[in-house]
Length: 481
Image 1 (cartoon, rainbow, N blue to C red):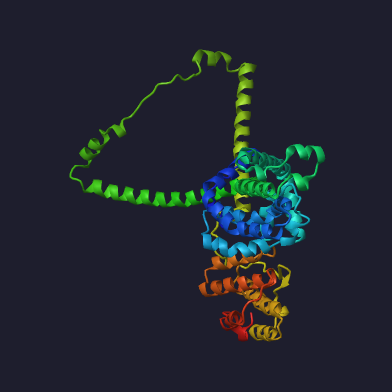
Image 2: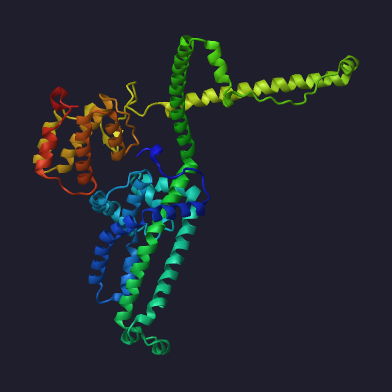
């Protein structure tokens, strides 16, 4: 995703203004988000109700505890929609299992009670960081927007509780008498088991699910907007985007100047071909567009008598000195600004260059995502070694050899600008931008298989592994990188 494609006006906002922006993003695509919510969350709720059918009082607690799982699909959709790429239902459905499996245990255990859950979720799910990198990133972002994330969580919690109680109060009269609790007996004996019917508990759980469905997507959108605002303030996204647009306008202005010069030359030739050029010019100048507007304005000048009388006075000499000093300060300021502008443009020249793969020598990384991609660390025949590892049922090592070999080739031979801090998704984006269609398509399939085995711990088929080995495009030196 490119920053130029963002559909949100980037500028530093106040925290609650960012929350309102996130709610507006959810309202814009609320229908699609609710459809995705129903298809992904309702099956889980049905499973919870079946497992806790003998204890319906625990259903709202289970629904509340599993909230970090619900938030991921709406966040996936909003993050793509914010950059102008609204994924279809089937694209989101395909990503659903991977989104829920990623960081499953941390989200439901030690991170569950975090007060900045929706604010930190984009950093955990979208930036591809893991372990200590996630903690460091969240800590950095929380220095700017952490307090706002806490306040937002408390506000949405209050809204959810108030809406839940309000819905139960508003629909209480629709319950049959057999489902209504014996409030008098409850306050006298505090015997919940005999005074509160199970039907009332099931009805309360259903009301809670309805309120969570209506409120939770807005909580996710508000946290995502706070995350965008925090990155805009810290990383200067608005400034970077303004410079990129300025570079585009400068390119367009150059083309406009060329067209104007050509038009001027064509206009001159037409005038020269006319029978009476002077008459044609006079006819054109009679048009209203060429009317000359004159305006008189008073101007102060030295009086000759006063000048002769006061020119040598100390006061006049002092004024001349101040005028010279002001001129010197003005030109010094202009030179200083020009010098600063030149230095700034030189330091940030990457903002005005093409995003295509650079052919200039780059400092190739040796380790990516904890994997050594140097040529010395790889076997001479990578494909043969991968097949041998696959035959020995070491599936992760087999795909690791293919993935490391591909990265080694692309970084050292193709000069793809991959840095040591890039994730699998970042590497794939850089390879796709390189423009080599065969290698890019192969690397896309290899990345999907590698992520599936390495992180989701889901095996790939023998046919898929055989296809990856047979279609290995880096064929120099017997298949090695």
